[in-house]
Length: 279
Length: 258
Image 1: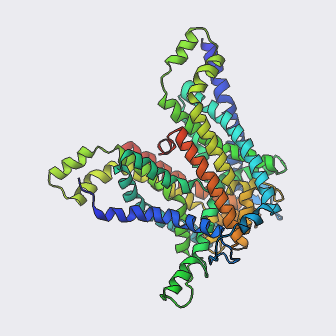
Image 2: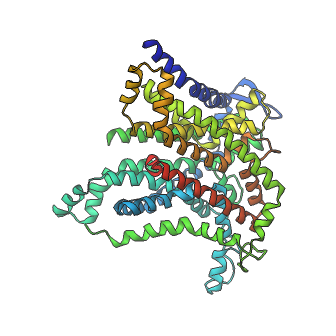
Image 3: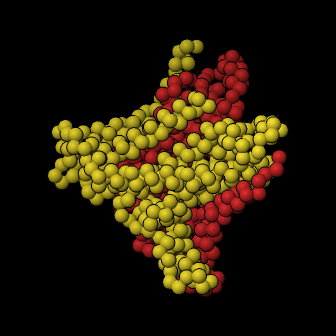
């Protein structure tokens, strides 16, 4: 019996784990090990220890990009939360049949091609695009507005891409909420705003945190949205990393930037785990 | 309890926001005008252009090869891993490793694999993308199948089967697997959809001369707006919508994800 159990463990866990070790853990370890080595003159790696990849991280040139990425991802997350919370709240109150339809309608765009969704915004917002031409026909503006290629456009594109990831965990948290708690609060004389702040919000906080994390993480490391909607300059850390690997061929510095990206995300994950334990 | 009226505004705004760009794309794909911005009447000509575009066709073939291959690989490995984690392990570390590819930014996974392939001197090609897509695909299959295992957590049938003398293999094939089938199918559909759409990892792990469809789309989009992309986008939308609704019907997808 014991032997067959050990065999079961190897047979079921073995192949998947080996796959993940070879194609996930080893590549990651390799990438992170590059952070301490020097860049070769024509790209590649010279296995000579150095700390310069880390000191370059706090060079204002790169630090600004890192801070800008944090700012853009934070604004994206906050707006997604402000729009997503009421949406998730109302979905949770719908009759069962409509609830499923409303949820599927939220998820559907998320499962469609990411590039296609970003492209749709170029069609809408570009110079001769639909938004500008409509505004001009209405006589509200004389010449097309510069709607593309700024940080606002990047934020719009990121919210559009990841809003479903905010709504789903929020919905799950709100759905679990016992309506009697809100009734009790109202019966005790609390106004709706007070009930929301002292009962609903604290009890759904795990959903708020999970949703925020789900939006923040992919927004922070994104390079496609800034590239297509932001005018192609290296404005977010994702672009910078991509450029180090594909254009500048500075793998050690690219690895150090990746490490910075992962470090920010690990801090956030730890915060989430900590708040989940408290809740 | 009465709901504040004001809440309906963000609610409807969300749906208008999510669907306006999609509706515009679909309508514009049937445009008879050459301009991608003004609608000149109904026509299927952009679908015709699409059908005769060799680059797109090759991209589609490459994408399908990668998607089918990585789906098969991820489904087999992911299902076994899910059963193994649920029945043969209590390790939190293994749990964490199994979800890692889904949490890790795709950029980091793509670069890690690029660096790894370069170090072991593997020439890039369709197989290198296929292997890469199976990494994150596995995480999704494992998660969906585990949800199914948790929902059907009753192990008494498996125990009965063992008590009656069935080998672990027979028990797995005749008891566990049929119970998990809907979850496995849904997981496979998800991996397939994700792989077809995946761009970031593919752009690091594919050979430049063997681009997948999203890589072709990326270069088209960067080059500028053309009505042909609208037609392609509409077809891709139709495929993903169908697949996701099918997956929803097989399992309660929205519930297992939230």
